[in-house]
Image (cartoon, rainbow, N blue to C red; front, side, top):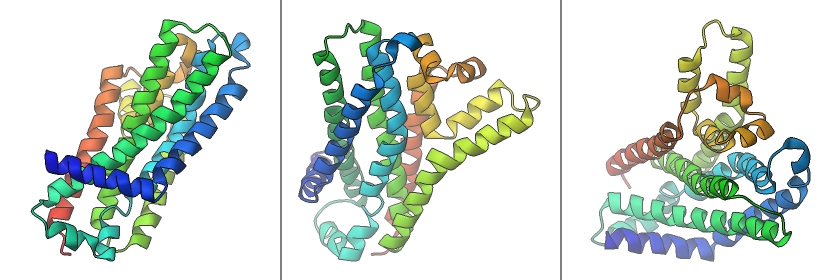
Length: 276
């Protein structure tokens, strides 16, 4: 475990040197603060609290931004080091490939967790500074959203590692990473919406819809945060999905964890067989 932690610290130091930590934190903080000041104005008309509206805005932002950041920092984690020749040097020390993989993974998660917590935390502090009353339920929803945002980032870091372990050059890894982002964030939901409209409820029942939603980690994240309470579901326009889907928070969290474990297991298997 000590070796893994040392490797993760090395990854964080490289992230600081490459400005990934500062760039990700600054981007998330800037967008979060913008959404906080622009998005909390209509709370009286939608019947949701000020922090509830911020949760809706930030959750919608997270689905687009956090997976992209995660893929950008992870897609060349393995293939990039092999291309630069540093992987051979690293493995000349008494470390196993699995330790290298999981050490780098923890380092990237630490970068994402720091950027997310600081960026979104600044939004909460800014909202507190306005003097608006915030209930305990809203703070629970905000905490859940922040923690699950880190979890969603971990999903796409794991997917990025799988891509990086399978391909042979960094350019291919980058192209596949962008394609993965487009599929999960944009194309999948458009295709699912088209299927539901065309089906008109004839074949796609509740159980099938639940399975289709769990096949996309961004949908599991969306349901976990935007369907957590009646007020948030109504304000976010998720009321219809909530009535159709019968997924509990535990099932959604389990799906996100499975989306981390499966790609990492496949990445570890591919990396263990790869010739350097």
